[in-house]
Image: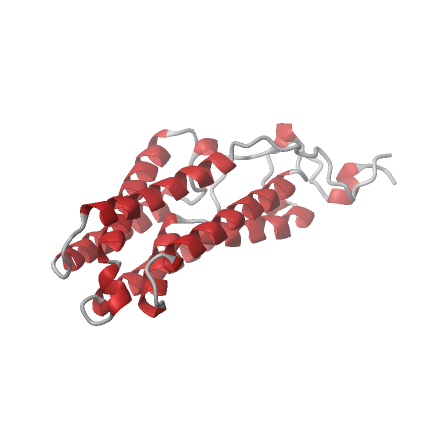
Length: 236
């Protein structure tokens, strides 16, 4: 066995590499990209809204998705580290954008999912008991998500490429952010006209979304033992 570059099929040139360039790493990276779709404040908010529509209580739709997606955030991080472990640190192109088709499909699905969830929830308020009772919490969640979108948008436009929240091309991020804010603005206007706003419930919903985003970002900073060489690769 000659060495790592033969087993891992890493191109021999000195050019910077992304996991999508390496056959063995590509699968890990694509799984991480799929999991990252779930680890999104938009998806968390949408899941809460949809579960309120079909649930028989107010709080299970908050606790269940929050715990489940937090575990997903950790798993996503492990797959991402495993993907990058196939590339020597000095050759990692950490700031490269994802392919525009992959990023566009992911962000488009996210926006569509949020739109469907907001529409279903607003339509059920005043008609079904649980969505009506959860109205203030939902309103706070939408406000928290709007803040998260604005903060991440501003950060991604000013931070170094390898420190951005999302690896999507700028055009995809911008379009998805604008579409999300339009959905949230319309949803909050319609919802506030249908409910008696309870400030405590609104603050709880706001804190859930902002808190979840904070925890998921902190998970990316927790030190892990990153292998320079995957365990299935033999050294000479």
